[in-house]
Image 1 (tube, rainbow, N blue to C red):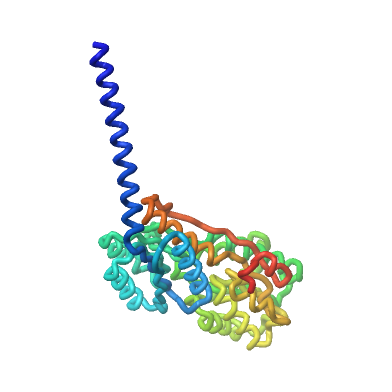
Image 2 (image 1 turned 90 degrees about the horizontal axis):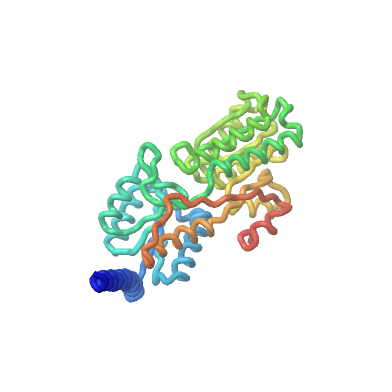
Length: 338
């Protein structure tokens, strides 16, 4: 009986070792295959001519090559759904190993995920989520902590209003430039409004305006200019927005209306605000700084870990931000301030 038990134990131990070896061999084989095969990553960005996506793409490419990718394809979807879908079809035809994408229209999320899944290509959404109609994420996402950053903007603007007595000034007003069709942007402006009204609960609702735009500077300019023109009684504007381009558009609209010297704008990202800070004067008083490098680099790092090591990608990865002004942006932003 003892001999039989001993033989069983030895057999089980050998089987365990064999399974362990087989598992290790499979992992080693996967990594070896990845190294032997040319690794190509595609980055498809909704507005490849905007500074944010240019910088994000550069960071993504640098991280991809650092981790062993042979090529990184930067593709500009030009805010055009047709160009975007063609890009998806093209990268599938090229048999790329992974895709990072910021989609120009979130209604295309389902078809994006279905096409790439069918082709066996892992995908990560950067900035704007790939999601269904209920808001459920269909693929892993990397971006900013949108609501928290919005709250940071709202807090800064509320404190600015109190310090400059604009909270009691009947010629002051708040303008929030929204992007209600982009899920990643909605929490930003919701956070701005919520925090501002929390700190100044008695600020007149009739002097809080909202105007929607699509994320481009000229559209932000047009949306802001229309509100300024419609309300000539307001001389002191406090402007918050859904992205940096909208904030700069508002700054240009204030300048055109001759209201910039008595108004304040806070941006999101600081990648355009840094140039405003270098001027002798700008209505852009502050911006929340969050790094496009962090979003670009992190998205590709997670993707490469999936490709090379078969590591599971978390469904949500968010980066935080901090406020920068003309006085501290160089110190806080470092190389990003150049």
